[in-house]
Amino acid sequence: MAISGVLDRLSSTLPTLANSEARIARWILENPRQLVDLTVKDLARITGSSQAAVIRLCKSIQVPGYQSLKVAVVADITREERPPTSRFMEIDPTTPLSRSIQSLKRNTIMAINRTLNDMRENDIDAIVQRLKQARWIVSYGIGASAIVVKDFQQKLWRLGLPVFFAEDFHVMATIVGQLTADDIFLAVSYSGETSEVLELVQLARRRKAFIAALTRFDRKNPLSRLADLPIYVYAYEASPRIGASSSLIASLTAMSALLFALANTLAEEAESKLADTLEAVRPHRVSLPETRQDTDNNPCTPPQ
Image 1: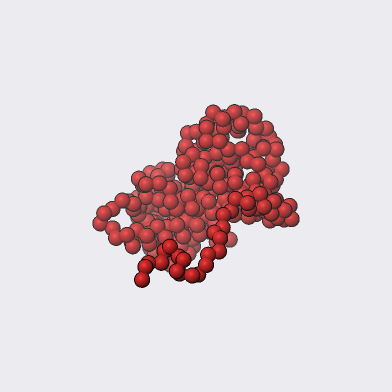
Image 2: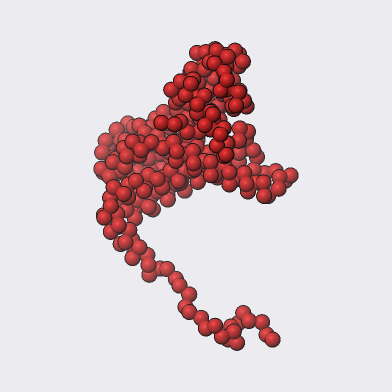
């Protein structure tokens, strides 16, 4: 199976890599086309590291070995949408609006593609089964991640699966404090480092609940390490930034893929629930009455 987005993995894990591994990763990001002609010994020499450090880097980004790394890099650079290797600032008075829009468009499309391409069906199926069998479904996120959780909650309610979520941390702690091994806790944090999310995850672990996570690709981020099953999101964000953009869209997309998989397993039951909820809100959909086409009676028609 082809490895997707290895350059993205190198970029996203760069801040957490050991010095020798980070030096190798930076060289690859800056010189991806030259990698194909290098042996592992050559790469170690050029980067002032060791062959062991090259192999450790492969393991850090979940690539089986050096040859697989080279093949994946070649696949990345032959795609038209090769990701940028440098960060950009969102606020720059000298940058034309058209260029900013194109950067946003490119980064969002790439984030969605990388995230969906890297999702493993076995992982999605495992979470779907947990959601269907759980006594309680609980989810939590802060800031932009809370938007993802609210969208998840609203859609699962429509499928007839109640989800517990509250913005008040104390309320959430009360809920999570009652979880059991029959429950699932879905933690959402792109950084994987939000203290409130991690505290609830640790509480859920003590309660023996199954923990799924939606977070950035980095096995070393705290949330990824605490989760029983992490789903990874790939995104390109400026740092510092106004707010989450491509990571938010990619997270919503990943959650939608999970929901589609769940709905497909519920089949007729899902259709019935969706129809019921549609009827429940239909009376609150306002439609404008038909208007006469007589311009003489149209108050918007200017006088002749």
